[in-house]
Image 1: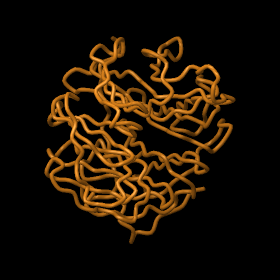
Image 2 (image 1 turned 90 degrees about the vertical axis):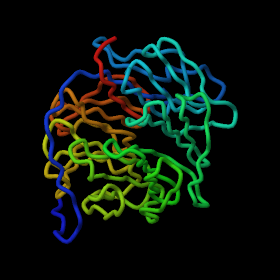
Image 3 (image 1 turned 120 degrees about the vertical axis):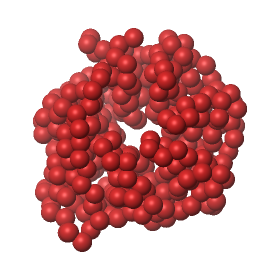
Image 4 (image 1 turned 180 degrees about the vertical axis):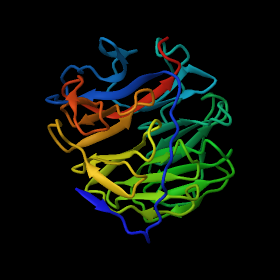
Length: 330
């Protein structure tokens, strides 16, 4: 499937410059295929990609959703998990719980690049923030009745700007969370938000049932992107290494890739055993390399921007997120 978009649709053309540096790849995964309640937990939790395969980092955990890192010291990791926000100061060797019983079922965590002591978490009942690296937490007033929040994104260029993907669409604060406004109430439920690494004004959002949307003005207004297959969309990934390349993945939608800044899209499934994709991301260090999670099958890898895929391990798993952390091997 390849479809040309109408020129009347507001689509941003994303330009890229090669990324430098080396990253560690972490993922949150649950080995869930065939598992039944009461059985011993299969390998699940936070994994790191090593030359020898995937290594479980820390203790087994049944509900790691995602992680972020402190830009001043990428050994400092924050996990969003079912039982709270958890921090490691040593690259995952030891962990400390930062939240109590009143902050559970976390969906996302983001460290503010402008003020790295500030950490945001997404919750089933809204958003909370810590201004002291997780020492104390405050719930913020989003100003909406339906507060379920699936995803957060901190604007890397403008201090105080945070976008929240919620059951009420995309919400935006430009004053560090003091006030929020609705930027796209029709995007329900917003499942993922990503800012282009090449132009800070350009964003894409995926949704549970409304398709994918782009913004060319910093997330203030949004337009639907045609050419994306129907289904629940779970994430978007800009390729940091290649001009105009971006991928969207989802349940029944599979993986679709654009090579021209979102003007046309192509399904790329060859070698995958199914179209139920939890996540698909580009590797910032190797042009053309992608990782994807096929539901309860395995992690798959492609070296040609998704045109062909091969099994890369973690059999029977589903992956909630892939995160590249700068700094190389520790």
